Amino acid sequence: MSQGPEAWNVLRLLQWTTGYLEQHGSDSPRLDAEVLLAHVLGWPRIELYARYEYEPDPEQRAAFRELVRRRASGVPVAYLVGEKEFFSLPFRVSPAVLIPRPETEFVLTALLDRVQARGEQQQPLRIADVGTGSGCLAVCAAKQLPQAQVTAIDISSQALHIAQENARRHQVAQRIRFLQGNLLEPVAEERFHYVLSNPPYLTEAELAQAPVEVRQYEPELALVAGPTGTEVIAPLIQQAARCLLPGGALICEISPMIHQRVLGLYDPSCWSDVETVSDLAGHPRVVVAHRAE
Ligand SMILES: C[S@@+](CC[C@H](N)C(=O)[O-])C[C@H]1O[C@@H](n2cnc3c(N)ncnc32)[C@H](O)[C@@H]1O
Image (cartoon, helix red, strand yellow):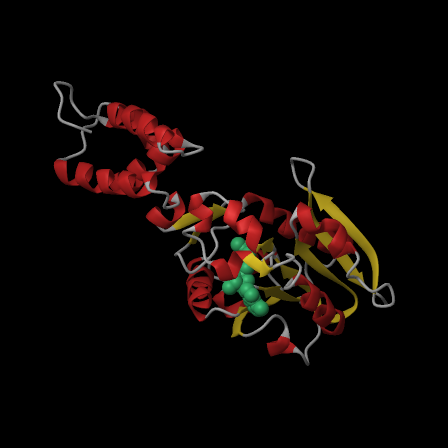
């Protein structure tokens, strides 16, 4: 972004930055450039298209330049702007939490499909979200099901702070209880209609192969289960068998890499109707298992 004869207007900044981020390995350089510039200008992204001729002032350009530099070094855009959209709602994120992923929306749609099929929309459902992170699943479940009482659990106190902030932002904090602890241990004596989770499921070897923005910037505690990838989900399935009401469901995001092994973890004497939901790419992404009646 050196000084040239032409003005550094929005269009030129976007064009230059797109090329720069592409060279530095971004998968979505134009989108990244737009999100960062809109953030610096305090505009909705769509406004960039209507104001291509606008010339950001030197202070705005300096702030933008700094964000672009950090993006080029691998920092995810969501951490740079402090926000990520999930199920059409903005969620605050920090490096203490995983950036919500589109595939995790399948956990929520699996829940909402079942609730609708059973005519439970207006019932005071008890729902637990294990490993809540930014709170995206807990907050969206509470938003979509106005009678539900949600319990959001995480082992990380820093993550719980972010999740609480998101619950307040979306006006559901009064129906979400936040607890720190290991899996379902803090609620071992309680019973739920649904347990949701997007647990850590990568192996250490998979993390080592992940893109730099994941490997270096997202919390390892949120990503890595252990040497085989099932170290967190295996005890979660056992604990959920005790914490679910008969007919209740455990709805878990998984990696396609561990799908077959995960299916082998549901003891048929405790679980029935174990179903897999595939993502848009056709990969097994969510397993729904029902507590035997
Ligand atoms: C993959 S992230 C999911 C975050 C969020 N639910 C989402 O889908 O974006 C996993 C979360 O589980 C938490 N976690 C890891 N081990 C845990 C454990 N043993 N008990 C409770 N939470 C745990 C991490 O701190 C992290 O926030």
